[in-house]
Length: 455
RNA sequence: GUGGUUGUAGUUCAGUUGGUUAGAACGCUGGAUUGUGGUUCCAGAGGUCGCCGGUUCAAGUCCGGUCUACCACCCCA
Image (cartoon, rainbow, N blue to C red):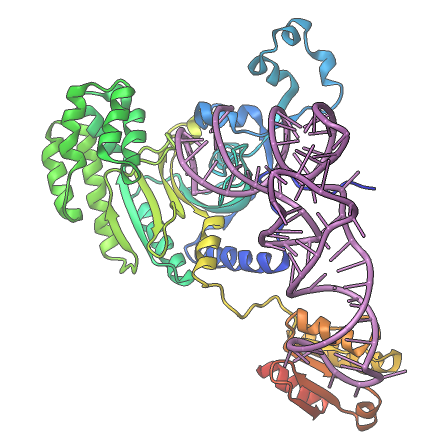
């Protein structure tokens, strides 16, 4: 006997109901992207490892799925390498392709490769699965979808502002209450500068990013463990404790950064961004969060993160500005800014809050019961007319027992069943049954189409 | 990658200090009802107790390993 089939760890099948719900999210997102003039691209599931390696830090490299070379690859491996048993040295001999880890790096590669065909600034969106060899947990998978929007080739902060507007638009449509948290890497760099720990920018950002989750004491402890001097930690405290609304925080930062050029630049960018946002009449709450760092270390300017106010959950959307992402692929000086929507988490929020729409464009509206060959022939022209007028409809493919066909309609939640047997045919009519109320009507084909189109 | 919890019909779960033939509910199939689904009633099918090994006269139950899902780190969407 065949053993039970299964799928790889951290991957999922999607049932029809789930796909319909997921498409609702993707369709809403795409609609808004298009509304702002973004165009879709797609890139291959696999990239050359040389494109992917070293772009996500040391951790990231470990989480890349690598694809085994084809053919007799072992014959080319020198014996000494096999004896050494050093995976890091052996891997390049066995694998030269990997599954993409995110959509941003392949996008950067795409831009460099097609730079002469692209009109800048390039506004693109991309909705595709990505793969990470992470340990799965609830809401964390090894295969998941990212929905990215980026503008590349423009330094204007208007792009940041529009991305926030897109976020506002999408979550308003999805009926999720959100707060958009904003910060700027230059502020964080300024902080590192004035406390005299320029070198430790990454450690500092990672540590203060945790302020929401763990206590101030723990954060300070972690900073000390990472080798940040006690003096610097002391200097950091008043900054972490900054209070007030956005303009108050910005005012205080101006004083703090009097001697930090990069810090001042960050303050100016924030002022400009919030200036744009004020004119956009957003429904979403905005918050300047100085502890917002986000892990990805290619961000250089604005940092954006979106959380829902409706339930306790990590961010459902995030992004920022990255200067010079294409530099590593040989095209320096092109700046980009983008955000990525976490489809899986948005799904969980909508499910939890029961916000998926009941009506779906993907379910069958009308089922013709099949009574036999003559009856089939009688129904087919009407079925064709229904479909022509855009009504999802089907005929049961064989003249099975009535009960079986009714159960089929019931399970598929088909709202209307059409019965046409001998007696109906004799009168040139159809019996239309409303499956919810159980009511039945004897109607002509024209009346049938009219009634069904209305409901 | 580190540490922990878990696994029994399709699903959710019972299963005594280790002791004959592993149960229930829901679901599924058929019937009551040859032109009527959701409610009801009757009958039936469905399990290598995640997998591999060990201890024992005897293992769903104890031990080791492994896989899976989940939880906390790490990191992240």
